[in-house]
Amino acid sequence: MGFADGVRHFVVYYGYLAVFIGIFLEDFGLPTPGETMLIAGAVIASHGSLNILILLPVAWVAAVLGDSIGYFIGARGGNKLLVRHGSRIGLTQARLQKVEGFFARYGDMVVLFARFVVVLRQFNGIIAGTLEMPWPRFFLYNSIGAALWVGFWGGATYWLGRRFFEDLHELGGPGRLVIGIGVLVLAAIGVKLWLRHRQKKAASPKPTDDKS
Image 1: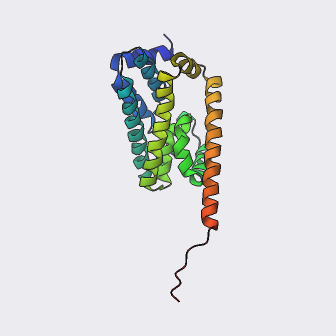
Image 2 (image 1 turned 180 degrees about the vertical axis):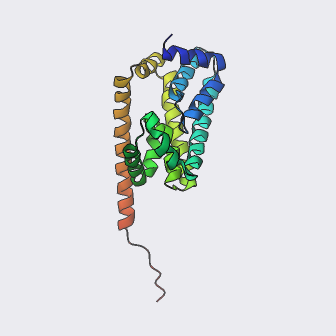
Image 3 (image 1 turned 60 degrees about the horizontal axis):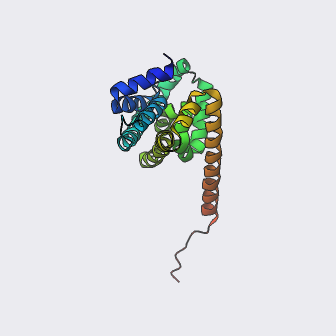
């Protein structure tokens, strides 16, 4: 039995709970196959064993809660944990510094699209907390990003071609490359529009109180 088949059998047996736990644990740093479980759940829902209208909210809540836990871990010293244990999962000190630098510059957009990138999906909450990103702003972008991610992998798998998206995910490197390129293009467009908005806002004259 392959990895994907094993995940599918686990989701068949435990249903919504399996999807919730897989996504929840993955989103604050543990190496669980949350994304694969979401796809497996959507495929199973397409066969009638699960209800997609329950599955998607369950996945969204798990994603938001998981990253929120990660945020508070980061706020309470998560950077030390990443430095100490990150090398076990390929997150070296140099790579962590690059991620933090990119996050510090484009924090909002990173939180929004982080779920589509494996390492960022696991650690964006911890890094946001470490860099003291304001909680209300993190929660807003985290919630929107979770909805986009759940809608793509869960909703699109169910509604737009169940077999296609399942096969694309199982392709491994090439499949993820296609998704990664698409996400990077969307992220680049979003970042460009956001920076342009910030520049226009900074360049606009501030109103003055003329009491004369």
